[in-house]
Image (cartoon, rainbow, N blue to C red; front, side):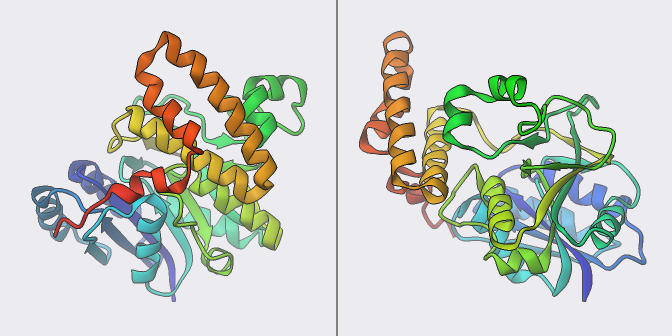
Length: 309
């Protein structure tokens, strides 16, 4: 059995993916049993072929490069990686636009998890490309968080809602950590069914950590003794389609975990909010239309993907 299977998704950003894989290999202890699985989420043919050539030039760890015929999204892409993984004690789900900068990062995270059986997920502290602090932790989405907003809750209920913008000196229990670097106990992950593949983009990590807590009583921790660099969504172009996907995922998450009434309350709040937003910023009208229809999964980008090869 391996110690860790690292799973990385590429989508038309082969340069970032190559640098990410290289950083894992350069900071890896040869005695630590590890593999790297790269899932290509239906990139352009030239990007896929370039990455395939570049990965074959790297030595030091076994690398599998798997091409998907269709863009199946973040959660499903990682689940494809799990399917291709060798039996392992841990999974490291790492965004392709990240760099590991500290020696023995994976080994140290594994040791931390080995010594704390109650923890199912952990993550190093995220930094930006210039080495500055970047928010790594977050609170579970609830009606309170979405309507009252994070800053209000952190100010008036600091024990329940930790300050996301604080640099913590010691390992800290949190609701969830950002999906750019998830170090997960493989058995716990498998026991709860892994990522919810209904989610195409966004809220996959929050949903996973919530289910691990609810179903198994397993915790999520920030491990700030280690850091990593994240270039922040290099493969995702921010536009109205992405904003629609964010709301669709959020409303699905709320309905899944809190029921139909909570979903309707939040949906109504969003419809009212974006009705007035559209009066000032007409570009948000397509988002308002999706919300008016109920922001169902049928409106997700997942339903618009096509087979490319």
